[in-house]
Image 1 (cartoon, rainbow, N blue to C red):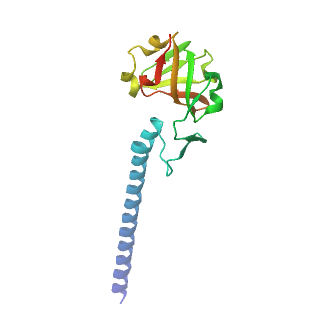
Image 2 (image 1 turned 90 degrees about the vertical axis):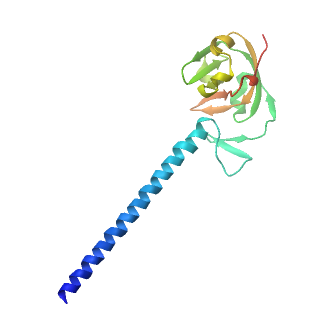
Length: 168
């Protein structure tokens, strides 16, 4: 009787170990899948400025509700802070520009931290003139795009040179 009881206890321990091993493996696999989805899908959309939501009528960018419509608001670039999330047309002269391997900044004011900047990501560089930071510097531009706020700074991400018209 004692022998069969020990055998039953051993069998129960083995089953518990097997269950815990399977549960741990499934949990680890689920975490890996969730991490990969975030890394390859969600982060990729966020880097492009797109946001995945259940609704197509509005998205949230840094807590600011955006409109999907392209109703264009013609504004002065100095008023950009009043139009975060709006699709706008602004006109101004580029007085400062900077480019690195990841991004190009075109600024309407030397105080770029407190004013709207045009930004072009490296993935779109081929759609613009080669030395875009030199090409646009000192020129008056008319620009169309959606004003976004990123880490407290205002920006209009540009995807294509067609969003820019050189006035002079």
